[in-house]
Length: 231
Image (cartoon, rainbow, N blue to C red; front, top):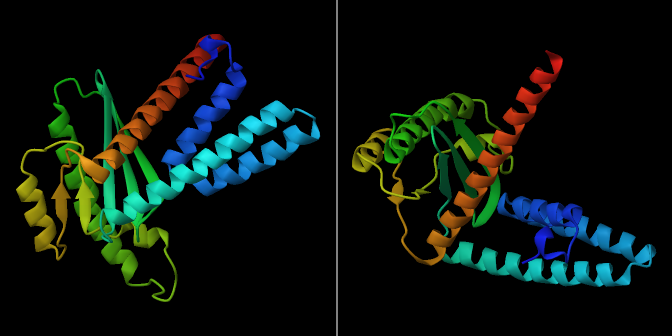
């Protein structure tokens, strides 16, 4: 463990490590590696050789993890997919969508919900899926009319409903949602993996959802403290 409580790492360095991990989960692994190389060079220039060596080892480990992750993602099939993460505390919840296109995690999107006292987790997730994908289909249809078909992967492409939606748990009326998407011309697999590569990516999505939830709670706490100071 490298938490500050072990006295083996400063709170600032631990926070940087944590942010690196979050960025990797959000599909920004290459950006993280570049930043770590720059930090390693700075440490070496400052003659902090032990810290530079530690950073070098981290870069090597991260490169290995990213390669394994890419192989696992490709092994799950060549289907474009959205991987859904869910995290809840009390009457608030966060849902995260990892957009996987052509075997690569290309973007993430977070959604925060409050006042959910009377709602079960499966109800929340089902209603999110219905609104997100059925409304998204209508949005994509309108934007598709003016899209440049020779362009690369764009925001519009990300809005396109994928061939597979990977869920963290079962939802009521899953067949109804699948039928509705099929009726709109989308043949979509709705899967709930219990093990294997897809389950590992669900775990990543859930960690991402937990972090997004904690960030939102901190932001709200900061706003409340600021308002209190202004009184």
